[in-house]
Length: 392
Image (cartoon, rainbow, N blue to C red; front, side, top):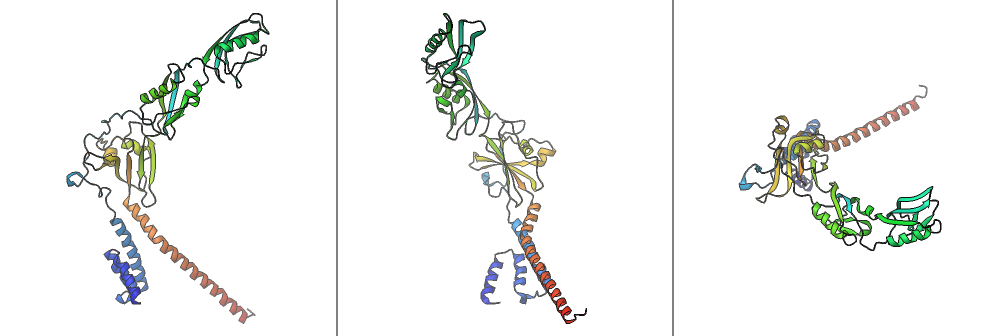
């Protein structure tokens, strides 16, 4: 072995754990005493095993990077942290994208003078009509601004008119058919009410769209504040508007359950906050712990505590499930990350499989190539034998 190659090999070996270093040194330098092929192969497998163990041994506890108050070696959870049977009421809900709001229009009266539009609903009463064709009840303003009075009377254009103008137009039309008709028209419902009532998605810019009445910014507001803002906006077009506002779908407040994947990729699940969730409820949402999960669970809560440190809440899973303890069955708050650590034995098995798989694949290709060459040589020799002895 040349000096430069020997130096590079020693550099690589020096970076490995001590036990693996001596084994690989023996593998790289046969002059050190290991010459038997089977022994060298066993030493290589042993070195890989020690390397995998060293990799796992290098893993630190989940809380090794945290800063504890007064240098303590364990996490101190204040008694004020909410938990099962000692929960807190969440603060007033604040609207954020993409929440879905439901609006009910309680009082929607347009400011005068109001000009009729398509989909407006008019109540029409006419006296002295034909006996078999009365005109009474609500009738919508159809596309194009027309009112249909029935087969016997035809249609009348009222779009863009006030109620009084529409009354006069209908009466003038009926005078060509009836004798002295008396017409009464009232606005029963404006079509724009349909643009106000119903479910409204809070857009990414924090607004709700109210059709022809424009949009209103409601992001960061409580429900009472958002209702007042919408009513104030509608008062530009309506007279003393009144609505009711509720959250139809809570889409902006979540907590997360993260399951460590033992080297095969972590899983993340997101669930909406109900205000009554605990750690046990959260684990129920993912159908319990999997075969790669350990019993080491904690909550990572956003922000810092009073001492400026990370908010980590360890969960005693066995106590919560087997003894019914409520001490660490914490209430889940918006933004919480519930972390389920991996099983170290399963993680070791996966790491070992990743290290051995390339070697097994290389050995498999080598064995396949050797068998192929041997088969070809066998048939070649047999062909030569047949050529030399054509009588057989």
